[in-house]
Amino acid sequence: MKKVILSAAIVLGSLSIYAATRTITEPVNEVVIVQVQDGYNEVSADAVPVAVKTALQKAYPDVKLDKAYVNEKKEYKLEISVGDQKATVYADVNGNWIKI
Image (tube, rainbow, N blue to C red):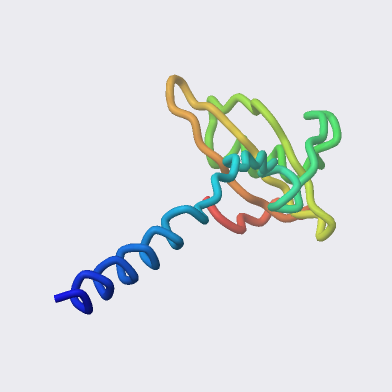
């Protein structure tokens, strides 16, 4: 009987060792800027080539150019609004649509 009680005390004592070594860490907050990730830099509406503006007017007659971005390949990301709808379209420097 002594052996059973001694074995139980050893088992319970060894379990409490693992419970006492718990560490608490602070949560890490990360801020990611999307503009840097997709490679586009914001430019003014005047910096958008005429060919891109013309293609935009042909595709969407009542379009309003809200924001324009360009990447290293001279591809333009255009945030537009037509009436109450907003969209993002992509064009190359010649006014050819990449993604509508």
